[in-house]
Image 1: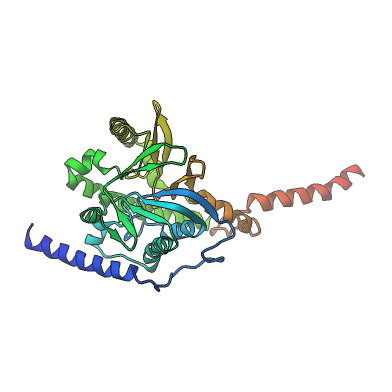
Image 2: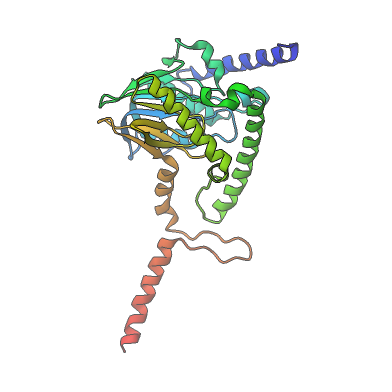
Length: 332
């Protein structure tokens, strides 16, 4: 390691230590609040929750949405399945708004309230792998582990980067891809800002391209097959992972494959119900459904030169009223 990279790593480690100390402060406030506090009306209880690929420390991280999820959801066990903090990005540029610290505070608060939190580091937070078999603030750090569901299934839990040939064999290419991905996310933010002004819901450009480009689809398929093969060798009933930012829950020849997605594009988590049943929760859909009643009561402002877009619910009410007014005239 040369002097420049050594100095850079030293600075990063110091910043990480300061961040850890700040996060472990028991009385640190949360910067973003919602009505209902820690016990909202739509409170949900699960046996287990799996989340990954949060990428705290990047502009693309949807920290406010994750905070909303963590406030609404309660669980006995929470698995952080890698790439929770993006060390790659933080080495290049320090970015840590209050909402990102609030996420860590919320997780630690759950620990204090009795939730068992298990942290399985990924490639973007590989620095945490140096602390495997240790516990920080009540958070257990492990390389991988086996989760036993309520219905007796054994699920291997790991991030998944070891099955990504680019990460393992060409790290420079992985970092280049990280830069391109960051550019796509920046473009996506501008696109969705315009969509929001038009009254349109959130839409992920990078997710769309990932599913349309043949090589990306082939990579996802190859990744899933490799993960399932290794899980079968280990004699487990299924596998839970992250890494590829693509939520999925299905069976491969009798073996369960579950990917909990991410909190950059899809805003998804894998949850286990009290009876052992597994489900992918799409929090973007939850937030969209919650916002629809409020949006139905007002028209969306039009862009210059275009007529205002009226929400479907309002349009339906207007049409019904017009039919009532026209009907008597027709009868006469």
